[in-house]
Length: 548
Image (cartoon, rainbow, N blue to C red; front, top):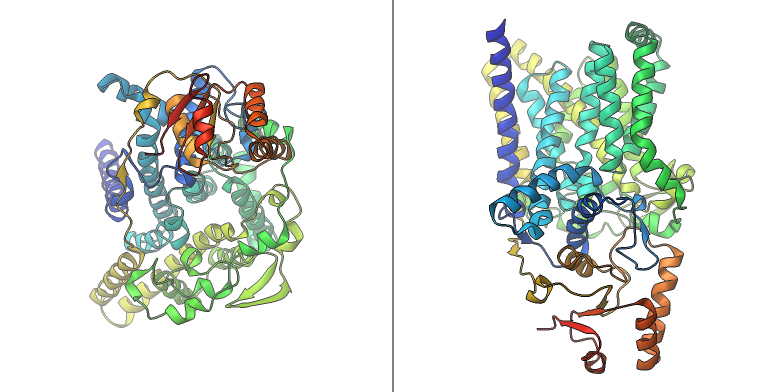
């Protein structure tokens, strides 16, 4: 018994190692070297800042959800921001390892960032594979759809968005729920609750996962046979197990939910929501720049997709689509039918409030229009993100489709033919998901930031969304006037507008405003800043000039 247990661990270890190495190969340029940056600002700077600010605030004994380090002195509620605070333990460990090695801990958030990208994609692949294996599919029938899902257009486009590549909680939750239904113990119930609950500290996809669970429950419970299975599972687990798991879930999410409701989330205009909705044609037409395998074959079609989001973000992949279509011809079991219904529902939600096909905004209302004014969707501008749930269920159908083909080929032809076909399909999915990534450059920290600087800090030119300022803050640690948060409140915007106004209407007024805010340091980024601003503060304000 011990030998078989160790053998199982060995097989699992080999499979995990394969997944980790495959991610490294396909995403090598964005992982290695670990101390590189895509840019010194934008979303990249924001994400590095996210990792730094949570570690900094917790280590200072402060609340990681409320801070005046950005939009000073108004501050910000970071529960409305794509914070991914759950990665704090990894950042803390990396920081202390670097501290022991060379003492250069300031670069820890950047190194952690690259490690997290590697880890997150590996976890999406591992748990997608494990979910399909838990559904009793063979290894290769599980691996092919798992690769198609992990490296789909959506995840590859958003490789640097930590809150989105934390989508590994989607297959992880599915895997744990399947395990619970097979073995409805208190431990398995608590595993589901714990990992679902902590996902709120990593990603907004917790809302999508809960919606999928609710939808699956309603559809399944409407079927007599499935309803009996659900009731039997709940009865076997027991009232105490279910109660403990629900309580555990509530205890974990309460801190985040409390601070989220402290401040009302702003509403997005419908025009913005429509802009970030999927185009129906985009699911089936690859973008030449993001799916180089097909060259310019689909360029003309892609160029005609002008409404909503096209294939660069939502293309589902031909191998995955073909594998899923095979399921249509199989003897469909109830589970696969439920998966198909759920997949369709979430693809429709990703289309946003109205249907868009190629360059045509049809105006035909869709279900998302019913929920777009309800929190938290009222604060979201991206219905397209529902595609990650739809794609996951598509990968399940693909697994069932490949399993059906297996049985067909083995029964009518030869076993070797099945292996050859799936080998070719595996090669196809790997070449399709391969895309060239830019070579990143090592970060160069301005020497002026290596010394203690007085704060708070004003970064110029003034920008309400300033990823460069946020990244620099990870080195100087002083409050900054702007920053980069996903949601801007009216108070933050009013504060920014007031400072912008006085800058445009006279140097003296601007100097007075700087004095009132207690600004001690000005960081100047480019030559768009007037020379007189620099010269006027040469004596009484610390100037860090990065224009060269």
